[in-house]
Length: 281
Image 1: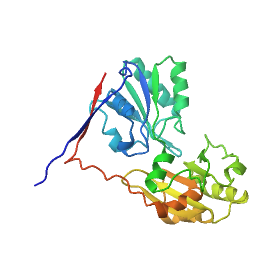
Image 2 (image 1 turned 45 degrees about the vertical axis):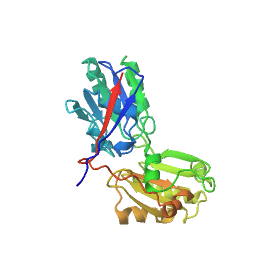
Image 3 (image 1 turned 90 degrees about the horizontal axis):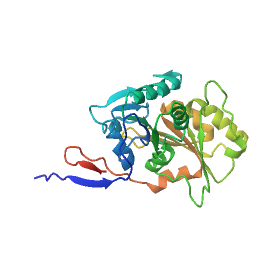
Image 4 (image 1 turned 120 degrees about the horizontal axis):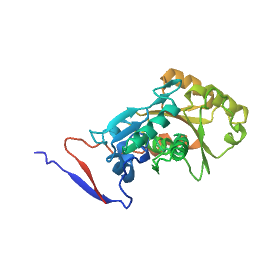
């Protein structure tokens, strides 16, 4: 006989509820809904309008009220459901209609999430807003793949780098700094420029055998990761057919993927367990 278990928790937040016409720019984390902050969950459950990106997982979207109006504004390379300007204008429009708006972004809004640009636009148009940080992909995906980003024996620093540039601009990075030893470099959105990344780093002195991890759809049910090297990076991406969103992580720490063997929490069976959040104002 199976006993149904229900786990309940109550959390108390001190901030005011989302006001009519206010926008909350919220970090949804890298995909696993268990990585949402309590503050993010609280605001998500208050949303009347949900403006969300391509990298927000369906599990996270399912936490919004069924009555919330949804607006998909996702962006892929050269394929935008809305331009950034249209997204900005949409948030202002919904705000002026008196809606409680949650602008939901994968990862952290202020780490390659255009959250800063959107906040500036809201300020310019006198729209009240708040920002909620989220677990960024580099942290979530590396942990779920089984390696740290820093380690006293391997990496004394970590650098987050955009793997593509605004518009058609070239990827002009400080390659000499990125090729320095004893660090971890995480390239977001870098698949299209993998050949350039590997070539520039090797030309600056990193050996072709320098380890690289590829982590696709990290923290989700579809996560997969592969350990490769700089000189085999492009071939590995093609052979394994990696697709966005995939992080490229360069550094000795990724070798620990084979030794740490981190086991992540099992997904909760929705039929036998329930997690309930009760917001107290």
